[in-house]
Length: 327
Image (cartoon, rainbow, N blue to C red; front, side, top):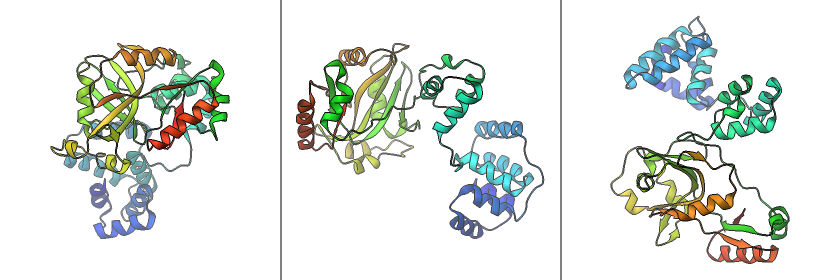
């Protein structure tokens, strides 16, 4: 994109960098750069879609640059900036996904709960809008290699509040709050992918986890936490950050910064979604799986009252963990 902007606008790299420092926004930078040599034709949405397809199919940066340069030369400055924003994914329009869910439900007269569940399963708000329009939200399903949006923990002020919220069944399950990277592992017989909490693919950063999952020989989706791990203990999160963003295998990094994947849930097993099954059943299934390092199971401890929760919390702090998760 940088090279295409330089060619299409005709300005120097130093000029473009100065514009970029002034705006700190790819879209505004592109729009100002293209004012030096603006085109006169805005692309209709159909042609924008075709452009994305051509860029995706083009092999190598030279061909991609040629395609993008030709399009930028045709466009006025503001649409060129919007195009760059879409390509980078940094729209900066101040519209949160929760508001989009509410708007979709209102626009197509669908239940907001159904819209949110479909969004959780698909991770694609555009696809959710299409299903809502077609009255097919029930078609949204947990699918292998399509990561689902994570359900995150919510805080409570003390152990009594935790018990009041979670103790209706007479028992709560407690496990250590782990300071790592929330990740889903999607595993088939011939393919394994690892996805982060924001649904990005991070498989190349943790090849040993992918290999261990593949060796299970099962079709399964796990939810868990990746930790820097050594001698049975988690290392500081800063150590784990060194593993992120690796696009190529490193011969030595795995030995210098070993990792573990601590699994606390099974979302899919042998092609069947388990999301509507009770956690107790999913946990029992997890216990039956024969895991090998770096795949580990989270340790669950039952508690029958607020005092037991407080005792477990104190023990977690002694182990160096900042808190507990109650389920």
